[in-house]
Image: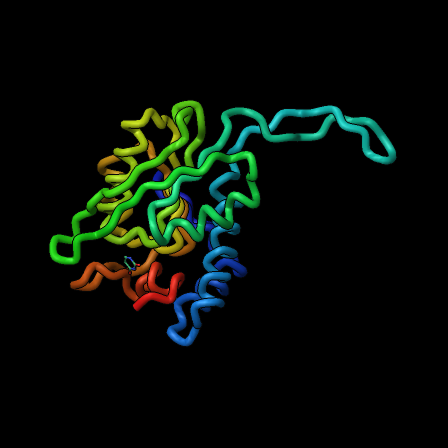
Length: 212
Ligand code: URA
């Protein structure tokens, strides 16, 4: 695992294997979508490593004892539409009590700047730990804008979960929001002239939804 105060990359063989399958141009929509969901679960396992627990007394078939159960702040999962949806849809199965928000953001193909068109967040987001999902942390523009949106709604504890990140995106998020930790399955080399992650996996939204 590579951990800096900013970015955590778990380096787990299962995660890396599944990510490599996602990168393969031969991987079709169904498999890509399933892999994205599985990678998201493995990322959530890492991103939620520091959730608080407290001992709760339970009775097993053999004994009564105290066992750890989740405590502390409740959770919110927030997807940046549209590609972040596959991540929250998967992760909510792990944490079914989490509330789920959505931020609609697209990237202007000319300026590469994020344009917000939708935001629907849990009303009590200020009291929740927020896990923001953006599969491709490329320029970081969408992530920075989404985090601003979350903070304007009162969010105080935010982690960003990405399948792939590049140094430019990590720096941009960190410069704008140094309090936000990032968890990514891999840190790729950088961006090409069109703002795509290299070597990357292509357009995550198109590959998840079969549009193109
Ligand atoms: N968004 C994607 O889907 N892919 C990239 O490589 C960059 C941004």
